[in-house]
Length: 185
Length: 143
Image (cartoon, rainbow over all chains, first blue to last red; front, side, top):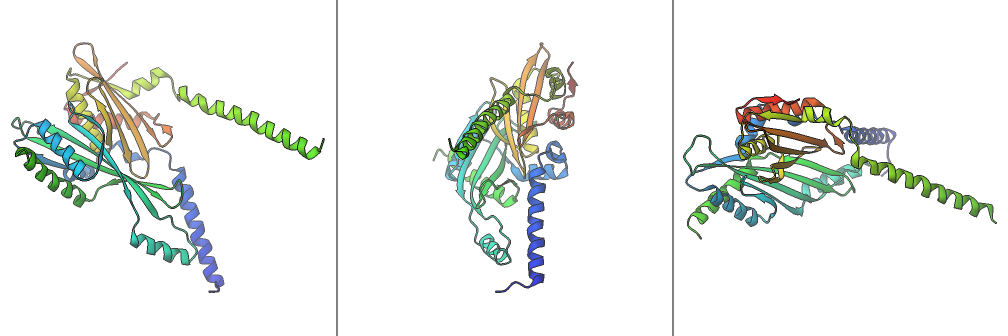
């Protein structure tokens, strides 16, 4: 298909835009203002990431968390039972059909967009006593992040996963795990 | 001797020599700091009026989770917590807790973003403000 002069200009503009964006991203080495600041959104996120479990001791609850992480295919990287902590990770595929077709459409107008290939998902789970509560009431907080690698070598995307559904899914599985642990199944 | 071969040999030798120098220079990063030790410790450290090291470590973990850090590892005996935050950038932080005298603990944090240390006092101040709230205790500056 022959490219019209207008199409060519548009292509040039798009390429320049992508280039400028890459330069800006590469230059973003300074500390973002919000990195160590708490705001109302962080409190909301805390609620998404936290659930209360009653009538179970801290070691049992931590063991139930480890079991769920194993159910989900995570490997445990580090743990400290005195501090109620487990950190785990897993490597998985990150290819996405929608993204592939978007990439294809962009490629037709001459813009190359890196496509996701694989990802490392990291989770840290912390169990702690509920403040001023009875002895066996605890809170569990899980934080999820991922590093996504793409078809462009060296171009990676890093994300703090905030989708409430992910957390809800984890806690549903944890409730089942707590039940199973409680009944020693 | 062919002058082209001579030129090439000189070029290769120059690359090897200068390349070697560059490698030695970047090696110096091992002991490189932006500021004096005293200056750094002052803004990276606070004292809290408690002797409960474990509770302090738990408060540090809770604060880091509020900021979106994944806790990479923690050691209650040593009094260390390390975390990573990934949100378009990669920030790493290590926080240590150790006793100070018989009535206080010292909390020290040091962080880096991508390949640079965080050498501005403000982010640390923000961190300690959040930690104060989590511990229900005031953070004292240390001289």
